[in-house]
Length: 119
Image 1 (spheres, one colour):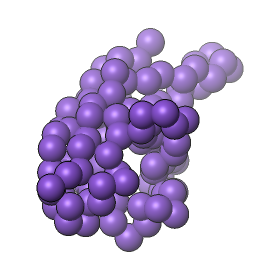
Image 2: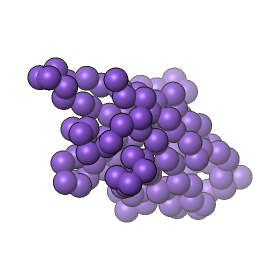
Image 3: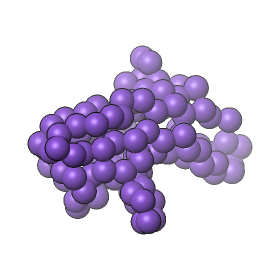
Image 4: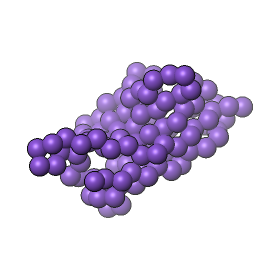
């Protein structure tokens, strides 16, 4: 079992920055992958960024060059640095983790944190 708790969301003006955090209940290096997803009202949840293995990252085209995913093993936390925010980035952001335990792959989600980009 892995608990994920997001924080750092809020209201920001276009062009501003936010950093989201996701605290995991166990050491993140046993997790096969971690990532950030987002869901705007009336849309499906979509991938924002992932980090796997020794640190390979992947980003949605819409956030490349603006968002950076990273992790810190000392405090078992995943981050998403979001710069140059746009109104279309408004959504609930969810932390995700995949964990292969005894040959079975489990998927875990956080409760989500709201990001609103508006003037």
